[in-house]
Length: 518
Ligand code: ATP
Image 1: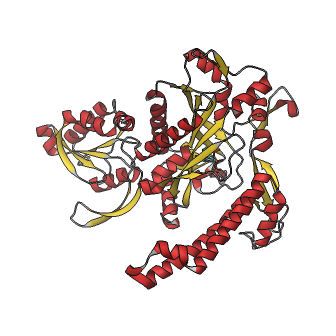
Image 2 (image 1 turned 30 degrees about the horizontal axis):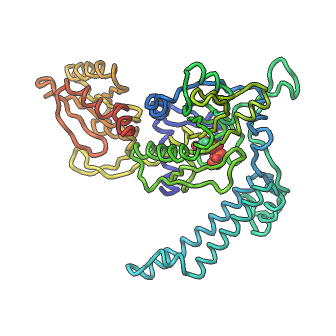
Image 3 (image 1 turned 180 degrees about the horizontal axis):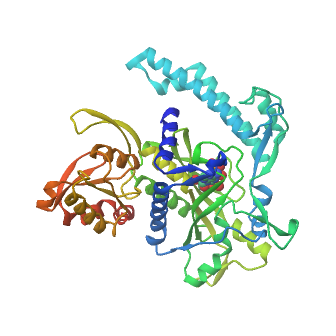
């Protein structure tokens, strides 16, 4: 998807009530968004599909809804107070602040673009004869660029891993990176900046009363690990799933809902026997990819990406990346978190967080595999996959442009629209209303009798409604309606009595879950 198309997608989401900028009347709050009437439906459906695929499909995964506020020691134990930092650099002329690593990554993207330019030039020159793989691995200029990228990446990752912030600054200076706004090279030193938002407990002043807005939902699961295990009598391996808000004071707040300051996570922590973690890590890697593919995502748009720098808590980590309109980026993380969190909570709280294995009569701290996905990023991936502009035949035999959201029917905000052919004939609108009243008990549907039928189809296409049910004069005699399918535009005539099973088969999540279960 081009940048141009991405801009159109963003304005489409506003025009059709999916996403609004927060506090828009005050010119908005950057990197904070509100979900409109269609947005909240789609978002709830994404959450429901994830929740059911975790909690309902697995006997050994249970749910939790922990509070956003937690005891401040939680964030000490988890490492967030000391290590949840981004390396920041300010430009002294523009007074703008940047993430040092992102400035360097953008520089790398510039070199990558040069490689692509060489490739497309050669493609044009050699036509059918062109062997792209050979060109990429042999062309001297391309090889030089590739080497440059590798060198920059190594230096950046070493500097970050060792905390040598001066080396990051040196790298920025040596690469001649300029402020994208002012073009200036007048940089400050690189400093660490903690991403947690904090606030204050009402009755305790100073540091003592400092509270954080949680930057991830996972810790609510860890501190409740034994409560859940004991009350549900789960045996290892078992998982705890949670959906909830998280907050990060992101510096690079751009790319729409990809990087927000307030967002929502769907996380599942799977507790396993130490030593078994790599088996479960691979299991969850495959299982999560299957989940994404079950939503008709183009397999070309999904890939795994191993972490170059492991987080302080992990012994293995991989991202599921999606081809967002601005390139392949992290959609979900799968991390083998070892016993890091439980061990630290046990140490700092002085309370045992151990599992007693009845079979072996042993106590131990379990290891953890985590799957963590942002609801908002999932939402953006669904929409960017779904957005299409195309020409279709119109009612008068000509062609008309339509924007259609090909959202998987099970996730679509509205499952069907009931449309009387004309609005000023009471027999027709009564009949349509009667169908609407019956169907709305089972599905989220709309009734629409304004404008021509063509325009009403366009409106439903634009919000991704998979089925339009047209009630015409014939319906009054044969008790049948025409059902139009959004993507194929195929129209089928069926009895009104068949509508519920027809829609159920195509929009009920149960069928998607059945496929996932295999
Ligand atoms: P990134 O490298 O893009 O900052 P991360 O590695 O810090 O992401 P995790 O801490 O692994 O992200 O969080 C798990 C998931 O939460 C991510 O895969 C992503 O889908 C989501 N997420 C993280 N930060 C944000 C954010 N600022 N806005 C929206 N979603 C986010």
